[in-house]
Image 1 (cartoon, helix red, strand yellow):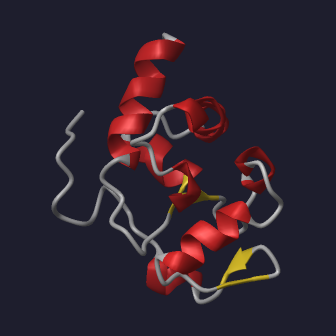
Image 2 (image 1 turned 180 degrees about the vertical axis):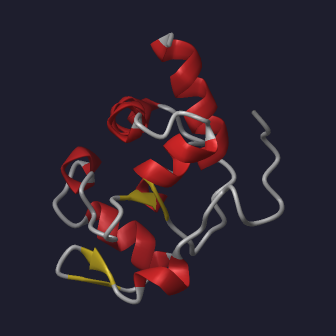
Length: 114
């Protein structure tokens, strides 16, 4: 799998995450037909911080933990971005994660198709 092409596909999915919602690395990987590539989705998110239109703060781990928070310049920046969108965060974890979880494979309105 070519990283650059995979990363761009990840970014296309991320651009579709609605404001005030979150998804997981694994959900993106599954949607892209590569369910074993959640870690590579994480690498793509880490590499996305110089791309203005990729809302990387909306991608968390499968338990709703802000596992990518160290890549946001400040220890609370990721949580602050999510809270500004109405997503409650306590102790670096999304409160009521299921309520805010967005699955690209199940919800309509995703502009990108594999």
